Image (tube, rainbow, N blue to C red):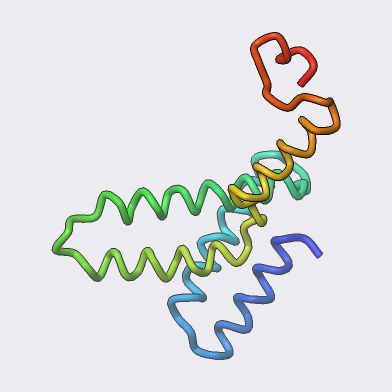
Length: 122
């Protein structure tokens, strides 16, 4: 199931539950995904869908960061929108997982303390 179908199904569920904020966010995301598919003149790959979702998350985060301190309503709306968008975002590795992956690669190569000379091997 593509992200477009998944978002559409979630949007229908939000309409049935009369959750206006969630429906509005999903509608915005669906429009962004469809616009990208129209620009491409074809179906989106999973990577392209994830790229659109990350772009929407970034824009919402910037809106929240640039909102004046006395406008809590904008900040709350953006926080709710971010929560919905992050449900569709791809899972990112935590810092500990990244460090574990790096340690595994270094141990496979037999490098205990990487130096500038090891850059080619890594």
